[in-house]
Image 1 (cartoon, rainbow, N blue to C red):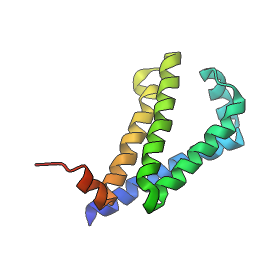
Image 2 (cartoon, rainbow, N blue to C red):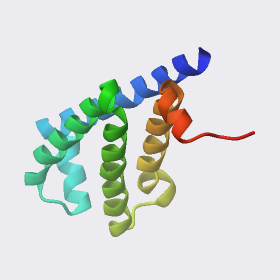
Image 3 (tube, one colour):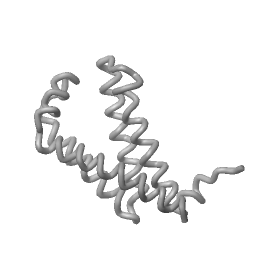
Length: 124
């Protein structure tokens, strides 16, 4: 039971973070404009990126589609890693941050989804 609540808590924190991130991409607030300029990305893709992120988060939140959402978010985060590595972002601050988010997404899902634990068993 403690694992279930830990999974829900981790998942909730990741969902809140990703919802915030998706919304600020859609709204194109000043830090997003600045980040896109630093990353060499056209600002015109900010809204589509935010919408894709928000759709993936919704899929992650719905129990029936949570694994699909996690897979899609993993791909989304992989793109973020690639963009940061392409411009030479510091590895342990910017480039690996999406890895940490992805690990926490899957950990939260693993702890709250019995079916996933059966599919990916850990043996002691």
